[in-house]
Length: 97
Image 1 (cartoon, rainbow, N blue to C red):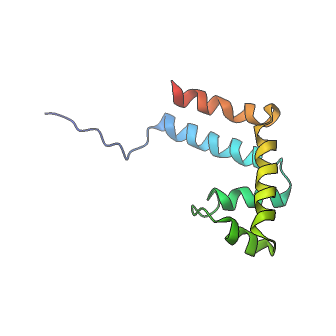
Image 2: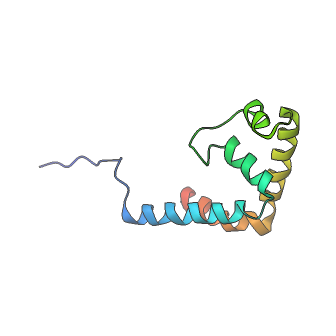
Protein backbone atom coordinates (compact mmCIF):
# COMPACT_ATOMS: atom_id res chain seq x y z
CA UNK A 1 0.00 0.00 0.00
CA UNK A 2 0.94 3.52 -0.77
CA UNK A 3 0.74 6.23 1.83
CA UNK A 4 -0.33 9.79 1.17
CA UNK A 5 1.22 12.39 3.41
CA UNK A 6 -1.32 14.47 5.31
CA UNK A 7 0.17 17.95 5.17
CA UNK A 8 -2.43 19.24 7.65
CA UNK A 9 -0.88 17.18 10.45
CA UNK A 10 1.87 19.01 12.32
CA UNK A 11 4.81 16.90 13.44
CA UNK A 12 5.72 16.98 17.15
CA UNK A 13 8.95 18.82 16.28
CA UNK A 14 7.04 21.45 14.29
CA UNK A 15 4.56 21.84 17.15
CA UNK A 16 7.40 22.55 19.60
CA UNK A 17 8.98 25.04 17.19
CA UNK A 18 5.61 26.78 16.74
CA UNK A 19 5.10 27.07 20.51
CA UNK A 20 8.64 28.38 20.97
CA UNK A 21 8.18 30.88 18.13
CA UNK A 22 4.93 32.11 19.65
CA UNK A 23 6.58 32.46 23.08
CA UNK A 24 9.59 34.33 21.68
CA UNK A 25 7.37 36.59 19.58
CA UNK A 26 5.30 37.45 22.65
CA UNK A 27 8.45 38.08 24.67
CA UNK A 28 9.88 40.41 22.01
CA UNK A 29 6.57 42.27 21.60
CA UNK A 30 6.42 42.85 25.36
CA UNK A 31 9.64 44.90 25.06
CA UNK A 32 7.63 47.53 23.16
CA UNK A 33 5.39 50.09 24.84
CA UNK A 34 1.88 48.71 25.49
CA UNK A 35 0.51 50.95 22.73
CA UNK A 36 3.13 49.83 20.19
CA UNK A 37 2.54 46.19 21.11
CA UNK A 38 -1.22 46.53 20.63
CA UNK A 39 -0.79 48.34 17.29
CA UNK A 40 1.54 45.62 15.95
CA UNK A 41 -0.76 42.84 17.16
CA UNK A 42 -3.78 44.47 15.52
CA UNK A 43 -2.02 45.35 12.26
CA UNK A 44 -0.56 41.85 11.80
CA UNK A 45 -3.51 39.87 13.19
CA UNK A 46 -1.57 38.44 16.13
CA UNK A 47 -4.50 38.68 18.54
CA UNK A 48 -7.57 37.52 16.67
CA UNK A 49 -6.08 36.25 13.41
CA UNK A 50 -7.52 39.24 11.55
CA UNK A 51 -5.26 41.98 10.20
CA UNK A 52 -6.69 45.44 10.80
CA UNK A 53 -6.28 48.52 8.61
CA UNK A 54 -4.59 51.69 9.82
CA UNK A 55 -8.06 53.25 9.90
CA UNK A 56 -9.50 50.47 12.10
CA UNK A 57 -6.58 50.59 14.52
CA UNK A 58 -6.77 54.38 14.60
CA UNK A 59 -10.45 54.24 15.53
CA UNK A 60 -9.76 51.87 18.43
CA UNK A 61 -7.15 54.31 19.79
CA UNK A 62 -9.12 57.45 18.81
CA UNK A 63 -6.21 58.75 16.71
CA UNK A 64 -5.64 59.24 12.98
CA UNK A 65 -4.43 56.47 10.70
CA UNK A 66 -1.31 58.57 10.09
CA UNK A 67 -0.52 58.47 13.82
CA UNK A 68 -0.98 54.68 13.81
CA UNK A 69 1.36 54.45 10.80
CA UNK A 70 3.97 56.41 12.77
CA UNK A 71 3.55 54.22 15.86
CA UNK A 72 3.78 51.08 13.72
CA UNK A 73 6.92 52.34 11.94
CA UNK A 74 8.62 53.16 15.24
CA UNK A 75 7.70 49.76 16.70
CA UNK A 76 9.01 47.94 13.61
CA UNK A 77 12.28 49.89 13.81
CA UNK A 78 12.62 48.77 17.43
CA UNK A 79 11.87 45.15 16.47
CA UNK A 80 14.56 45.24 13.78
CA UNK A 81 17.19 46.19 16.35
CA UNK A 82 19.64 43.29 16.80
CA UNK A 83 18.91 43.02 20.53
CA UNK A 84 15.33 42.06 19.66
CA UNK A 85 15.57 40.54 16.18
CA UNK A 86 18.28 38.08 17.25
CA UNK A 87 15.69 36.23 19.35
CA UNK A 88 13.56 35.54 16.28
CA UNK A 89 16.26 35.14 13.63
CA UNK A 90 16.94 31.52 14.61
CA UNK A 91 13.40 30.62 13.56
CA UNK A 92 13.90 32.24 10.15
CA UNK A 93 17.21 30.44 9.70
CA UNK A 94 15.43 27.16 10.43
CA UNK A 95 12.78 27.90 7.79
CA UNK A 96 15.37 28.57 5.09
CA UNK A 97 17.18 25.25 5.56
